[in-house]
Image (cartoon, rainbow, N blue to C red; front, side, top):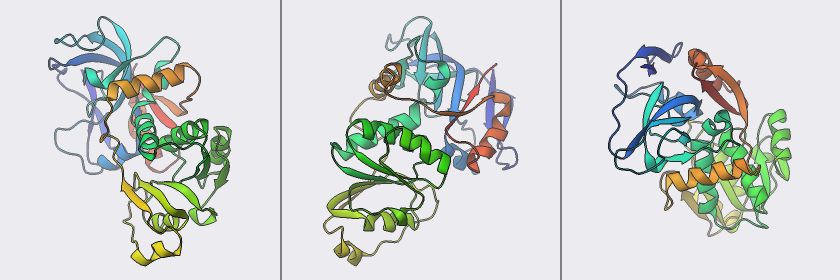
Amino acid sequence: MKALIPTGDPAEPVVLADVPEPTPRPHEALVKVEAFSVNRGETFKLERPVPGERPGKDVAGLVVQPAADGSGPSGITRVVGHPMAGGWAEYVAVPTDALAVLPDGVPVLQGAALPLAGLTALRLLRAAGPVVGRRVLLTGASGGVGHYVTELAAAAGAQVTAVTRDAERGARLAGLGAAEIVHEVADASGPYDLVLESTGGRDLPLALARLARRGTLIWFGQASRTPATLDFFDFFRGPESAVLRHFHYLDADTRLDDDLAALVRLTDEGRLHPEIGRVADWADTAATLTDLRERRIRGKAVLTLS
C-alpha cells in the first residue's frame, strides 16, 4: 500500500512510499482511510522522527476487516478513528476501543477533523469540572483545540475570554460563543475562575497572574516551545492557594471510543462544528505540513486519499 513516511528533511518532511499493508491484531479493525487530518504537534515530531514510526492519529474511512475478537464495528462501516500512529496511509489497523461509527449525517472530512483536538477539548473541560457561570481564560485559542473548547465551554454556560492574535480567528471564536476576544494574555483583565493554558513560555505566568484566589490553571500544552518560569511569591499577589494542574488528554477515566462517539453525536446534532481550514489531496501533504507549522492555515487541515 501507499503511505507517507518521515524523511527528517524540513523542506520535505514526508514522502509517499510503498509499505506493507498492516496486519491487524485480534482487537484491531482494518480501516481503509478516506481522509486524515494533521495536528500541529505532529509537525514538531516530524523534525526528529523515530526510525520506523509512521505519523497519523486522526482518520476517517471504512472498516474493511472487522476485529477478529468480535469487538467494534462489524461489516463495512463508516468510522472515525484515533490510532496512535500510521494513519497517513491507505490502510491502518485501529484498536476497536479507538473507533466510533460515523453516521451518514457527518461527512468524512468533518469526522477526520474530530479526534485529537476534539478529545483534548472534551477531556480538558471534564478535568476543569462544572463551568456554568465561571469566567474562563483560554490561551492559544487559534487552533483546533481552542475552537472546540470555546464552543463546548460557552454552550455549557462559561464566560470565555479567548486569546488569539488573529483578528479573523477572533471573530470566528466570538461566533462560537466567546464572550471576549483579546490578542495578548496581558490584555485580559481577570480575575478568572479557570485558566486553560496551552502556550507556556512568558504567557503562563501572565495567565496565572489573572487567576482568582483559589482558582485553577490547567496547563495542557506548550505551543511556544519555550519553558515557563514561575515565582512562588507571585501567587500572593492574586492567585493565592491556586491549583496548577498538568493535563494529558490520554490520561482519562473514560474510553476513547465512548468519547469519540460523543463528539460524533454532538456534530451530528449540530452542536459541535468542526472547522476545516484546508482540504487537499494527500500528495500535497508536505506543503500542507509546512503551512501548518508556519500557521498559514486557520482551522484543521484535512487530506483526502484519491
